Length: 72
Image (cartoon, rainbow, N blue to C red; front, top):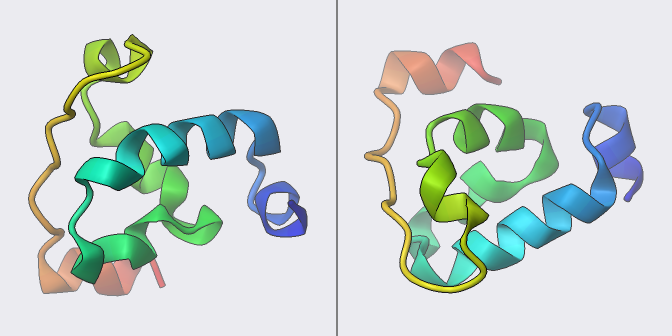
C-alpha cells in the first residue's frame, strides 16, 4: 500500500485492476504490474475490457527496450 501511495495510485483501485489482469498476464512480464510501472501499463489496456467484472483481457505487447529504459 505504501508503494501505491508513493507512486500516486489509489491502493484499492490498483489491487482491483491487478487482480483483474493477473490471470491473463504472462508470468515473465509480472514486473509491469508493480505500482512503479502500473500507470504506464494501465494506459495500454483496453478500458472496455477493464470495466467488465470477468472475462479475458487483451494483453498489450511488451514495450520496446528503449521504452522500458525510459520508465526506470
